[in-house]
Figure (spheres, rainbow, N blue to C red):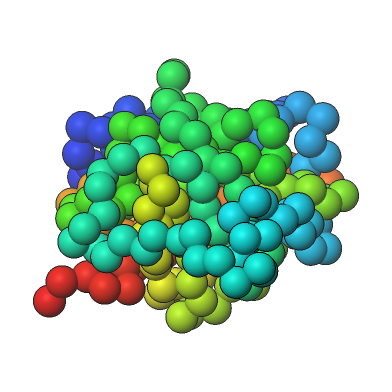
Length: 222
């Protein structure tokens, strides 16, 4: 097992665990996500399209209700929502911790979890880590995360301001590979970025892989 050099926040998430039953192993010596009991583990054909929010209805009526923050102006508030237009995703986000070094997304598969001990979206340094479920019968917010492409946009909303990210990489990692790359993928020392991940490759008894999407702020200062 390769050794990893990790900061003190990452060490809270680094424990070799066995994926048994409802546990989904995101990475040996990296991150473990627990699949919600009864969520129906696996993949879905497509992510559901959410009902239009009042803001979307106002936009359809020609009323601009969006305040788009620049990278420099973004307040470092906890994220409220994540929008991924290419996937039809507009999901609420709430802070989650990692008791026992297990990172557990919200039980609702249409909610996402942001690791509150890591970087906030908009921070100058560190990976802001957002995790969520996939569901093989449909209904998971991140069911089609692996279909994103470089350049696709992801928008984090915090206290009414939008911070826009552009996807830089989309990769599927097996357990061994994500373990080797954990220090790099979830680093809190890199320039500020967004990292979104979910499970992948349901084989009938467990997940074999994880999708990791890395996105950079579209207007990072030079």
